Image (spheres, rainbow, N blue to C red):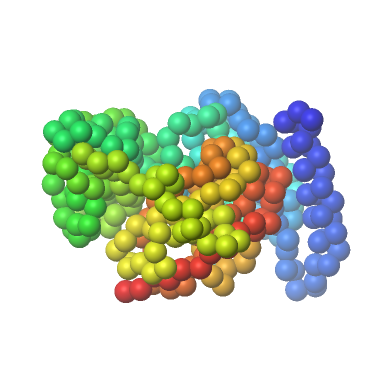
Amino acid sequence: MGMKCRWLVWMCMLLVTLGALFSTVSAEHEYVHLVWVNDQPNPGESFSVQYAGFPGNASDWLTVVPVDYPDDRYGEWVYTRGGVDGGVLVSGLPEGHYEVRSYFNWPAGGYEVQARFPFVIGSPEYPQGQLAWTQRQSYEPGESINVEYRDMPGNSRDWITIVPWDSADSAYQEYSYLQGQRSGELTFRGLDKGQYQVRVFFNWPSGGYEVRDRHTFWVGMQPPSMAEVAVDQQPPDSLAWTEKSQYSVQESVLVHFAGLPGNNRDWITVVRSDAGDSTYGQFYYTGGEDHGTLEFRPLAAGHYEVRVFFDWPHGSYDVQSRYGFSVTD
């Protein structure tokens, strides 16, 4: 069955389910609402965003943004003008990982996201959910480091630095202001043997030392790989698990995975343990890999789960594997 046919079948099933759900909506207006994109758009090509089950406020609205944007940032947006079901046309965007987000009744509803739909434009080669990354995972000592960045907010003093991976967030070494550029490439001096992080900061000095993105790489050594993870370290009945059972709030979280079916859109997320199955936090598509290692940004203190899902959107939010861990102050 072709891609478009599969999408049509999936959407028909979705709308049938939606109709059934609408029949249970109470008089207190507990609306069931959805947003989605019917197909994978091509870079630069306008595309349609569909919505259903909205409450019908004149200032309900939709926006499309890079998937790692905070909830209070928006890109191209449109009011539904009282529409309950319908579609809007969105201008073409560069290849990348995006999300449709819906909000109700501006300004009373604020930036509380009511529904999300992640999707991809083109076939982006850069990692999902990251603003900056090195072109390679490992370099030789003294070799120049090439860093690419995308989807920055465009402030003249957004800046990027490279530091040892365990440095405090306020630490910096060589750094570069981006001069308002949203995407591009930087070259940093070579480094001694060790493990390092590329760190992204917004709009100095008002943005302070709040790290907006981290990417770990290695100099003079190889990154950890599944070949180095003993088979007996994979917990029974878990397709993905953390390197450690407990992390501090300053640490990136390493997640190993193995035994996945190898679909391009198998995906892994980390969420609080009590979150519903349709909730997701930081997430990565596995890109067809059946095993590997992913790095997640540091988390607030609490109890978390690594959750594995197969073949989005066909696999929906059917959790295939869970693995618990904790983060402490």
